[in-house]
Length: 233
Image 1: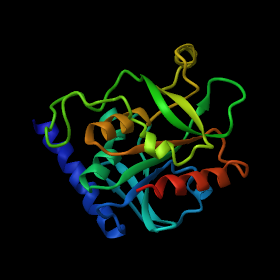
Image 2: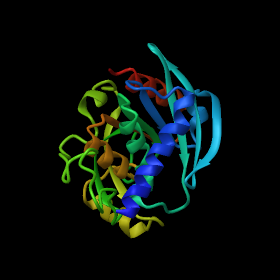
Image 3: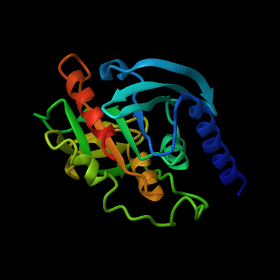
């Protein structure tokens, strides 16, 4: 249980770090790939520090009914699934209303639009954030995974394409991409499935907004969809 206690301490530390930025019960959290924050029009990125080897930057992005607390995670090159899922644990511990992640993906089929939302995933990473001792207060041992990408959130962006995301191991192998395509995935990448799994485990509404290109053509669509997802109550 030593490792489990250490993990719990990391979650508690994240909550303490983010509280001063405005993190509060009932607010949505926005998790953003650090390379595309400018594409969301986010401003006032206020915190830049390292928490348990994970760099955090946080700030404010306004939606119609008030501010939310976006935060950016820049992990090392190959973090384990439990580390990747720390934002979901933090959001659940802080009793956030939802977690919305904005991330890059790679197309596996031709002709996809530049922006989509995950509707399901296939986990080919060989890792799972629920491995190890289970804290009953965090969720049941085997959570319901029938709606990990919350339907009510996806309904907020009906004009955004729904994709099956393939979670791949690091480094990503072309053979894994080919397998993912044969299994029905539309796009692939890293860092989405662990968040979805832990969100489902915690009963936390979750959405993954994905972009194939964060250039001028994609940025307005990303920002518009992110605000709509964050406005769901």
